[in-house]
Image 1 (cartoon, helix red, strand yellow):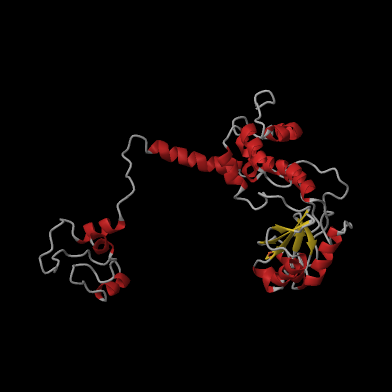
Image 2 (cartoon, helix red, strand yellow; image 1 turned 180 degrees about the vertical axis):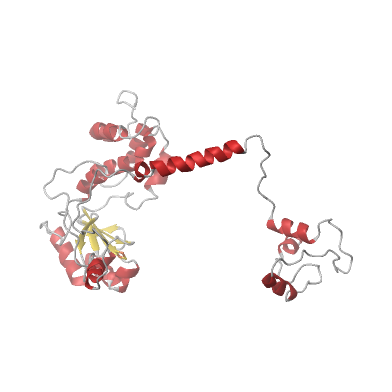
Length: 338
Ligand code: FES
């Protein structure tokens, strides 16, 4: 795709005018012919302008990728981080999943809902806050947790602290969370989610893992359980070879084995898997010559001998019914015959 190959429709043109440069940059990250994989960051890019994905945003993504709008819509409606209607400046997510709920997450959500006068996925009249309950936010060690625009805003949240948080946000006061990055607007957050560095000061939070996260390590140390050379302050390296690179030798060995196995079987007949319906297979084992049961239903076919003692015990306790089948067989055939 180049900017000369797409003739944008009136619906997509306004977004194309603003976003074409960044969109082209995103597409360039993907191998030629695989650009449609760029749909996820492109949808975030659309949200940097719109705050949600409107029909115009769908048209823009579809046209720049050369796919149809239904394909874009299928993705945009699948992931909850793509909003399909206007969303507030601050998306307040309260985890109500198992651990957070046990520790009061639902009370936090309920209090916020009552205080703001909105329910799940609804926005306050001033357009500042959208409330949602969220599934696990991957911070169970700080449960219950509240995020604002996907940054951790409240750890071990209480209903009172949550109300205080949203009031500060509505008043336009800056809010510094206990950990993580400085709270930004939802549109600003989409810049990072689209894969671009955010130049704002404090846009990226970092720091040492907190005590709740390290609780397991602390306990291990207290009890003398140690992993040689483990250092919790070890920085995360960005140059570590990918697992695929690291295991290249192993992968090559496996591939070689598969190749040699294929070669050694070349020209020999391959035994196909048994794709028969299990009931057909069982019937054939019971009655290999397909003889017709007599009118009393007292089948003459002899079932195969049980292959182990447990099966033998089960077979003896499961005497044939009048139709020649063991009593435990399904009634599928008789149901179909009705
Ligand atoms: S259950 Fe709430 S963060 Fe995991």
